[in-house]
Amino acid sequence: MGDTGGRTTTASVRQEPTPMPRLAFYALAVCVLSVAAAVVSFVQGSWLGIVWVLLAGVSSNMAWYYLRRGRNRGRSVTG
Image 1: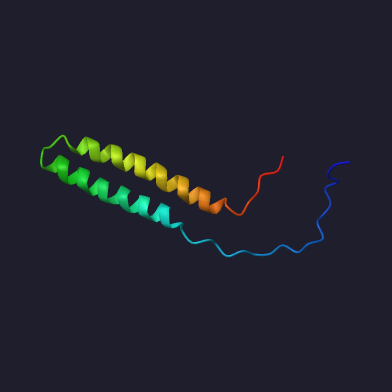
Image 2: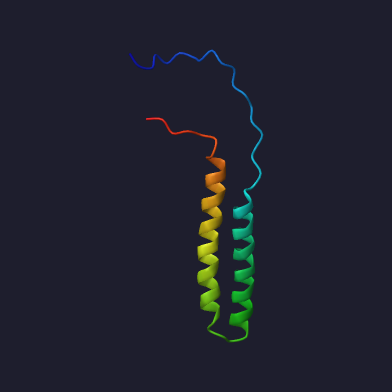
């Protein structure tokens, strides 16, 4: 009738950390390059840097999403 709080009989298996997913790596690369482009653009006095900053924000969110999705891929949600 529910969880009794006892230990499970299966031994815990240590898993190696998963490598960074490929899409997360690409999104992170786009983020770094767009930040560099924004800095160059603002130093030159161009307002086009705002577009680069927005692109950096979107790509950083994509990198976090794909990184967390890759980490949680093996886990299942019960409840």
